[in-house]
Length: 218
Image 1 (cartoon, rainbow, N blue to C red):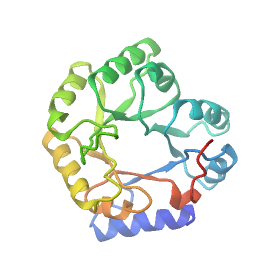
Image 2: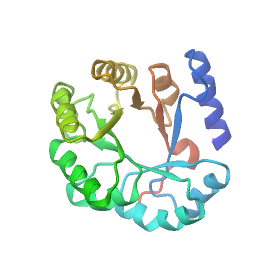
Image 3: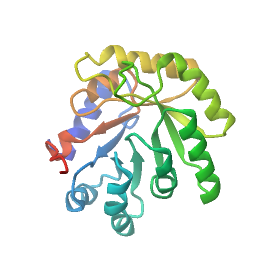
Image 4: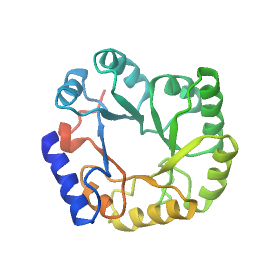
């Protein structure tokens, strides 16, 4: 699919859900994509990108930012606390806060660097042991910790189990966000972003539909 096709599908899903056409932000997931392919989307007008790895983003995005200063970069992978300094320096939004130790590390680095980045709390809606994210029943405590640290929590994020129908996970995330009074939901990827929009997604993370199948780095 092209960028225009994905955007058209987002608009169509918004209309079907009775939502405003501009109520969903497209986050183009550029993991393992070379800078020239990212720049193709930049030239076409896309400005928001998501990366899973700090080191890869450090290698790819500084030069692109020089050419496209309005580029916005979201961190969407598992973040180790020892990468907090680099993540705060490079990214504009952190979507994967999932434990108190990480929240504390981010607050420390934001204070040091004079940055106050919006964050999302990642919720492990399927409670999968191999996946990042706070368990739903532990979410209120982590949210309170983030509030105490004065982290700017914009919303919640999830990645449903690959084998599950995503509807229940999207509905759960929307319910959890409503209970906390949070307005933003980062959910939905290439295969299910239209469904996510139906359940209130404000950010959809789309990679394969824009770039094709990724070639994993060796």
